[in-house]
Length: 316
Ligand code: NDP
Ligand code: OXD
Image 1: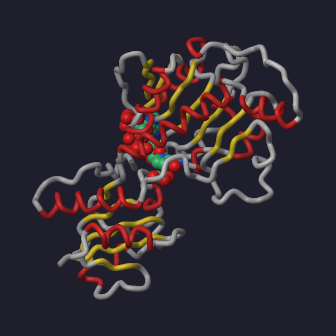
Image 2: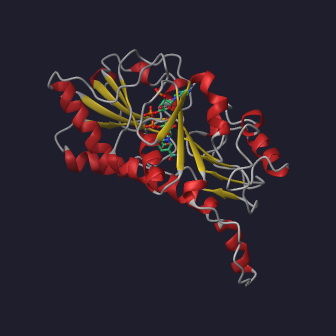
Image 3: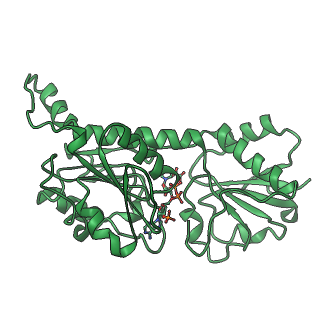
């Protein structure tokens, strides 16, 4: 039978291995680097940060499954075989990202960081500039699977929501902006900027000082905020720190960083206005990942098209 290889770097592969074995004990499962066996047996690879060149060494490879929704971890491999790349789209992962975005928006909207400081200092004081959600503008960069669902959840809470994507999206209750031409107007309509873009050549370092200065600072929140759960390569750390210093940003929630894990001496850790999480805004569970991969392999073997295939020219 066609073998499935787990090529997972940076994580202990065993939790995924256990799920694949429990769901498909008959499947010939191989694990890189310990148990590859005969390379020509490998038809499917489930990969995360696989070393460049590894996937090209399997002559029968028919599909690559990304361990995550993002596929930028594959982009640095110039020898990547020309086979379909399938990314994760999973309802549970989408809900988790929506939770993260709603939580972070509310943290800033409700001034929770300042109340945390007051609590530490045993101060009982109402911070009296709390606007209504209906007066606050939230902009979401990336209106794909994750951005759209988060936008809808924020809309239900009453926020004024705008979205920015490559192509226009006519969505009820959500203002749609697209492309380079729509970016400035979108930023001017965003007091809280949520970034859920993929990392592609077009989006590198997009969250820079020039962009942050275009956010709306004189709105109901009386300041601008950045939430990035897309990818670290989209943000310029030094620019975010400069923006916090000069008042361009009043606060930020950062789940991703250009260098992960975040260095122990990073100033982000101790900045009271910044909420740092360790790239875990939304993680697909090993069981959901195994089900998704096996379902797609089942489709391929039944002659059906794969779902959620990455467009290689766009890079996402
Ligand atoms: P999708 O592919 O469904 O959506 C991507 C969105 O970004 C689309 O709306 C697309 O526009 C837009 N986009 C892409 N490039 C550009 C560009 N150059 N200019 C404007 N808009 C652009 O991806 P998902 O929503 O599933 O995931 C988004 C990203 O979230 C992933 O790539 C990953 O990096 C990150 N992620 C982070 C996690 C975490 O834990 N921090 C967990 C999971 C994902 P259009 O619709 O027009 O194509
Ligand atoms: C993903 C991630 O891309 O976890 O799924 O970052």
